[in-house]
Image: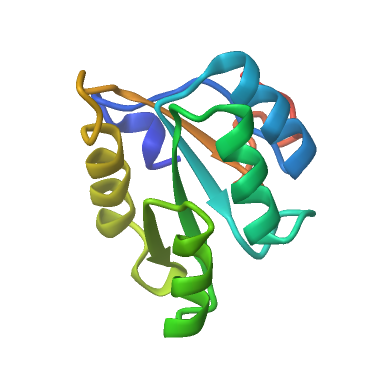
Length: 127
């Protein structure tokens, strides 16, 4: 919900599963894909690798409960540009999304949450 009120972030799609997230990313080509590592139905490393192939121009930001160095390293090595612990959610997540979005040549402003964030309609549908 917090992302919906930010004037510089537009949510172009939402889903609760990895396969749909991959399809949406390849179709919508978002600037940033937000992946909840624990809620994805695909292992985080495999999902990131597939996401990088499906939408190579999209930056992947990981949200995870497992905030240890090994997990961070494993996910970032797979291609995530940022890792945000669910313990530091909120402003840190917005900062990571904005930094990931502005890393490109043209500052992008779209984000695609994937894999476990609460759907906008509460029923898993895409908005």
